[in-house]
Image (tube, rainbow, N blue to C red):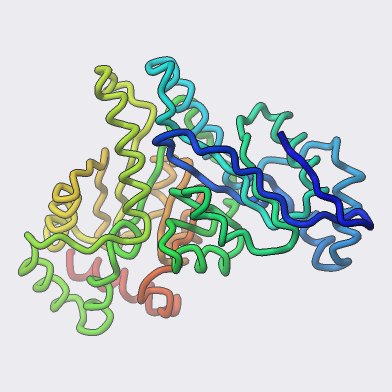
Length: 346
């Protein structure tokens, strides 16, 4: 149940509806601008101010918002929940979606109406009335936070919470209605950026020598390792019911590494963590966009904007993880790095 605390003049202070988290649930916090397309509304806020923005939202509160970039991902999470409930009727080990937004509570009516319009099951809200919601992520025991604000995502990662900035693709691809498909980059996403540091400071030859020398030493974990771990936990629920071949969750590793020169350490690291990845794709510096167009994930996580933009051009919903040394690398350097890997391999 949503409650509003009015402070006069049509505005409200922050409101957090923090129902108890279902035991062992995987909590995904999404902002209103990732769940819904609020580009027009955002323009009113920027150009005309908060009063006109809130008034517009109230005036149109019975008009459903259009789906945003994270909408297909959230729908896929709910489809997995349906399968889990069929197999485990009494279990609360499923996905728990929280709407985490700095919107004013008066805007909440339109958000609720839109959620109900699309048949989404989102019971927990955090509407902070202009205040950053990042401080509430730990209170909600968040496993993944998705936002359109790069600053908020960076703040969340600095707090040790898996987070990414979601971008709307330039075109729409048809996505699976029956299987949640999640693609991850490796370095600076699932793993730390230690290997990228070596590449940028000492070059590819030293990097390949280093990876061979430390092949049996696991890489340190990156910001999204825990989310992959959470997905694996739910996958095993299906495996326990002999549903491995019909599992509604599928994970992909899509990395610029080459398999022969630096792939073994990655796979051994995942094994040492007790984690499985369904498909591992080593591209040796080739563009990721065309392959992702074939995979058609509901979301793809990468630390390099070069790969995010390439994926978006071909219709993949992509999420930028602002972590590691790569955040300081200009686009030209990123392109040169990919070309050097291709030249080395071929």
